[in-house]
Length: 505
Image (tube, rainbow, N blue to C red; front, top):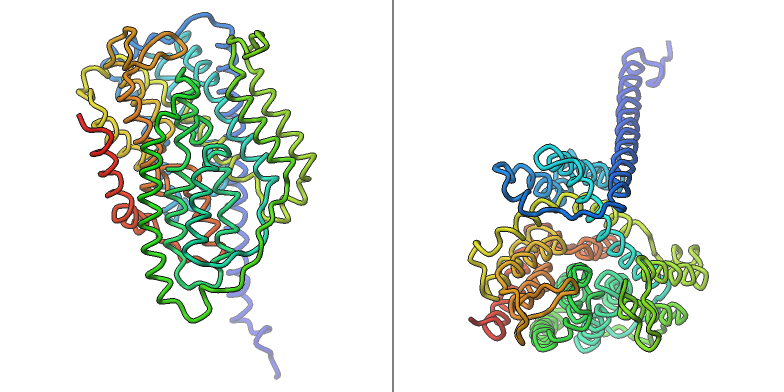
């Protein structure tokens, strides 16, 4: 009898079993995704309703009442957990795929935020929890609208053409990126320039160092001169730091950028000598910028952020805009940018809304969960002994490396405000609410958050985006620990120099 292998009775059960197992795993995955999406929707809507309930409440969060609770560490636990999840879940094989979904990020972060509100309601009072949620929403909305607008408008600008993969050209791109980061934001500048930089260096065998320094300079250090440059500084601006105060950091910015560029130039020149003949000297051409309408819209967005502030008169007009006027203008400019550069054209050139949606999902929970640690630090910050700029620089920098630099900035900004004598003084920065922060302490916090967010992939949002794009283009990027070693060898010595030059007691 001629029996084929497919008809063998011993083969049919095996094939059927594997097929059924595959279907079972697929069905389980779909169920998990469905449950995650439902949880994300429920948690997000509930958190939004609680926040909206508090918008008409005239009260304020009593930080001292939260700090007086004996178990305030329990109230801080959700904040620690959501930030730890950012570091751990993408690295674990069992959670890596699940964490890739923005619904998963929203579900977990919103859950941690709601747990924080529940603890406040239980220990202090329901009204305090409602006001805390409204306070978080009041800061989250302008924060995410700014990032969304800059990201979307800059997505309509693209650079085409290939230049020579020389050290001089690469240094020029990194320097330009460090400048543009202040106008486009570190996210916008990174997304605009990382692909042209990789395209220019496509024929080179040594490319990892170029991407690493790109993360240093464009995704982090470059954005410290304007509040729209890096998320921590914009949060400070929302907390009342004058818009142009960050320009006072130009010396620190210039020295840090110059040192990093010099280190990169030496390293790139040495590695270029090891390249096969012709690999680093591929013929180049002129670079062309497309999307000039979006460039104009970006300039208008920056102007809107600088001059349109709630309840403050607009220069030359004398009109004080109501709440959310600035956000409405930014969203309107974003709409114009999508009309000017259609979505299909953007997607064709590699643009995606995924990264900004990821940031939005994660920070929903962070802004809620950080209400307790912020309240505790604002009440007890003066007793921590962080009364010198260098101390705040290194403490802020360390936590910005291990966690996310935006909430870390807010935490230590409250510490700096707590140790500042609340009086009008030439060395004090007056915030919008009438309180004061010592200029040197605010400098330490700002530099630590912005500069040392580059120490790890999780220190700042654009870091992971740049790494993902580079890997997609074939660059063998180091893992989490490998990147830390790069940063410790190349960036940390520069941070020591900055501390010694500008933050000495």
